[in-house]
Length: 509
Image (cartoon, rainbow, N blue to C red; front, side):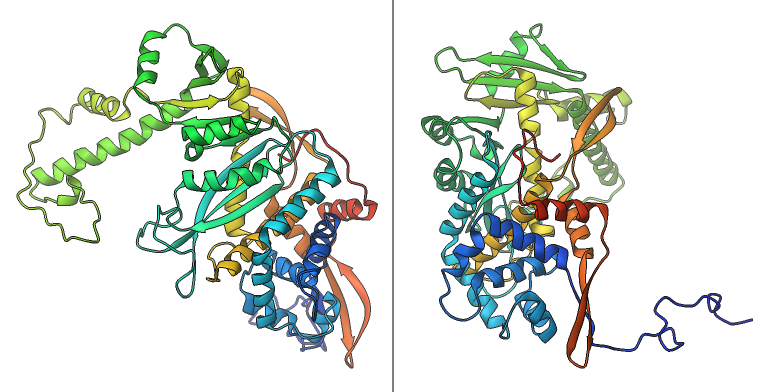
């Protein structure tokens, strides 16, 4: 009986009767990714424009394709990209006649950052010409990423987005995405302590130049400053944004208890339109939000009760009752804290009262505002569709390599952001041209059919698996073999071969 229970199975890697393959010079490259990037960025004129920024040596467009492919393979390290391109056989397959060093790649990233505005403008012109969008409503949002390396020219301590340590520097960025197609069209980086309002004021005029007049701009409350909303209206566009509730909203809730409009199961709305301007506010009550608010308040109250139990048991922790605000200019020390517990705080009715107090009168309610009157259902649907830009930001950080930022010069930071945008855009264009699949789901007891397309992650994975394999013998490559086709990559390449994009009324879900 052999000691290894699987020894009777011949390994698929067997070579010369051994389970361990011998080294060879055969190569495989992610042909699916490379061809997809080359096709879609070339179709909108970006690669041709990039080549005009570099007069000698390796064409900049070809370097951009290689870097984008490397990013989508899972690494935003320029040194790792240079190592990959150092293989003579990879160089040949990628179309490089000369060696591509890390220094060459770094210079290319800086050149892209230096010309970021022109590149984004060309991308939009080419994209709009390709698809002739009838609807250019955009979702806008921002976030921040930390950076690795020396002090960044845009690095600063600001509101933490991805970490709890507020003393760690970061770089902010804002991005815009077409709501219907899901294709990102804009990105811009900012110093790490720049407020959301400052970023919106700076980037919106550039977005106005790209979209059709009369488009909707959908934002979170970071762009809800009065002057920002006015600028959108003055530009000939419309806005829908989330706002913080105020005292007047509390009064409206108390005075209009019988005027709620039904929107859908578990959701109703109080709507108010200002006759002079048409500006409309919506107070939505969501049963799901109320349940989540109650659960969060209950966890908080249970923590409060546990803290009192600990105190009465002789285990006092100052942090359970007192929070000290960070102040790097001073050392703060608190002494002499006194605690007086309330009578009957363990009673279930008293606990429920504390939960209600913690929740407040606004529990389950959120506020939207639009520049023009919409029905509550229209406003809610349009704002919910804004979730795709949050998915984009998550993808920019996790799939297309913005997090962590591995460069620190201003133009390199801008160049890295543009390359991440172009990588996301190429995948989004490929997804946009896929035929949607009808998927039936149950929502709140109702059967709903939705159109869906593969996610960015699954599209990247599928195209990464599609490889060009070449057997190399005596330094010469034999016939190319394309391996690992699957239904998704087959459809993507069918669209690439056709070269005829279709104008669609709706976009990827």
